[in-house]
Image 1 (spheres, rainbow, N blue to C red):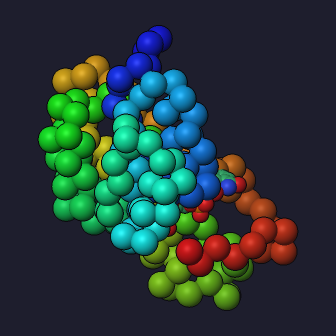
Image 2 (image 1 turned 90 degrees about the vertical axis):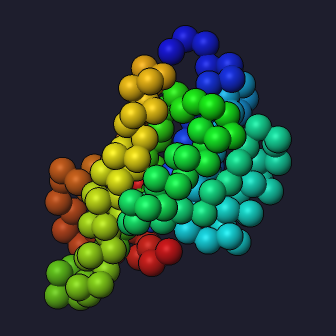
Image 3 (image 1 turned 90 degrees about the horizontal axis):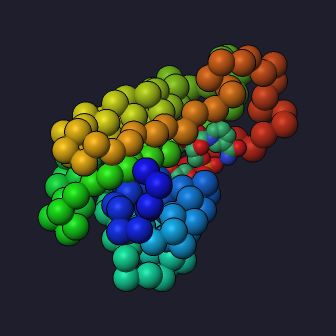
Length: 158
Ligand SMILES: NC(=O)c1ccc[n+]([C@@H]2O[C@H](COP(=O)([O-])OP(=O)(O)OC[C@H]3O[C@@H](n4cnc5c(N)ncnc54)[C@H](OP(=O)(O)O)[C@@H]3O)[C@@H](O)[C@H]2O)c1
């Protein structure tokens, strides 16, 4: 995709961090952007930061496929197309197994694994139509074990 002008991108978890940074860059390239997050407040924060009429914010929890279906419908209603999806939403609970709770484990799997499936499942037909792209953000932690990683990284309970 050489010319990004007016192409439409959906960035899950675009309210802060890497997703928000990518949104800023792609706005600069002329793309139309949808960002999502779990709460009205966080989505509003992201929108305020981007401060651009070519951005919409959607409250959607990637752990819920109905939310992601709704998000894609909103985007297509607004702009009539979806060209790129960046499955960026993610959480990291860094703790040794004897300290990690069952709830933390399931939230990570629901967000980082099932969430990526939900976003793709919800958007795949639109991406086939636009001959678009689906990208995911992963972590080295997915393929490398870090002993006591908790000691070097903050515990993210966000
Ligand atoms: N930062 C790093 O060093 C690093 C390293 C390796 C991989 N990654 C991966 O890169 C991605 C972004 O990381 P980051 O550092 O930018 O994280 P971050 O600053 O904590 O931001 C996470 C984003 O994900 C959203 N989010 C979390 N759970 C969600 C859910 N269930 N549904 C929808 N949105 C959800 C948050 O939105 P709300 O809070 O508004 O809901 C927020 O916008 C993640 O997938 C992370 O695993 C990051």
